[in-house]
Length: 150
Image (cartoon, rainbow, N blue to C red; front, side, top):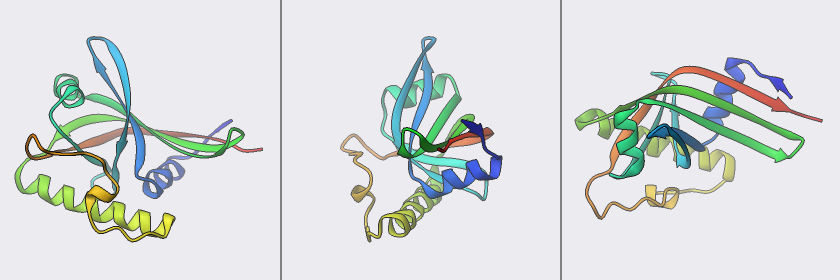
C-alpha cells in the first residue's frame, strides 16, 4: 500500500458520488454511507439529509471525515480520505448547492455508468415527507489517499 498525492485524491473525489461519512456522537464514532458531490470551486463536499441523528450530531460537533473508495479487488484499490468541518446551508445558497449537487452527480453517472438520470430520486433514496431537505457542505481541511496495486 502506498500514499497518493493530493491531486490524485481529489481525482477520486471528482469521479465518484458515494462515500462514507464519519461523525461523533457522545464520544462514539458513527460511519454511514452518503451520496455527495465534490465542489472544486470552494473545495468542499456537498450533500443533503433530513432531520435526524446525523444532522443533530454534526450541528453539535462540526468535525467530520469522509472516505471514498474505488475498489477493483482486494489487492487493487484506491481511496481518498477527507477531514473537514460541517456547514449547514440555507436560503439561496442551499438551493444553488443542491442544484450543483444534482447536476454534478447526473454528469458523473452519465460518464461512468452510461445512464441518463433526470431526477434526484433516481440516485438518492432520501424521502422528505417531514419537510425540506437540509443541504450542507463539508469544508475540506485535509485530504489524503492510499493505493494498493499488484
